[in-house]
Length: 147
Image 1 (cartoon, helix red, strand yellow):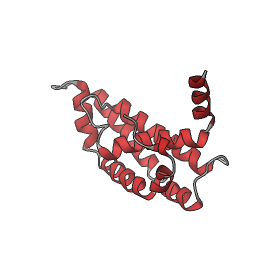
Image 2 (cartoon, one colour; image 1 turned 60 degrees about the vertical axis):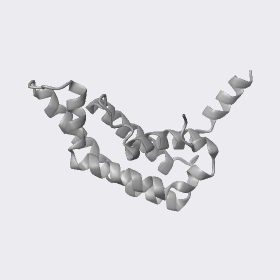
Image 3 (tube, one colour; image 1 turned 120 degrees about the vertical axis):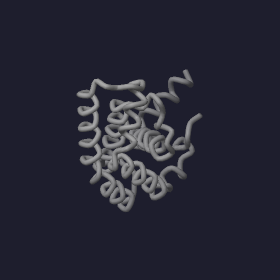
Image 4 (cartoon, one colour; image 1 turned 120 degrees about the horizontal axis):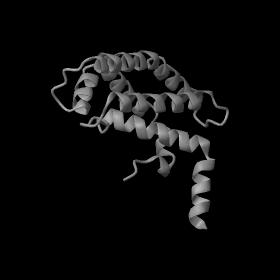
């Protein structure tokens, strides 16, 4: 019963759940933890999409508890998202057209994805954003990295 109450409380706080989701993806990208031999174009798209959706909700939702300044920081971050999304889609289409892959497809994907200037910019911007949004994470122990 207590486990069910805990689960309900965790999911009923949309702001907290959205911040945790955003930080989980952002930390993985900024720290390079998402960069592995199974990091494909598809996963890059998923990470980018999840971050964009959470970021948009945190900026636009009346239920968001972020400060005006934090929302402005996120708005600035959101401006780079269309370019990142387009670069990932273009790279994915180009990779799909090539049939001369000599390495495992996932590793080839990662090498090509890591070479994208827009992905590198995304990684750097994400690391900077995390340092700017430190306050929401410090105020709630649930926002910490989960082991």
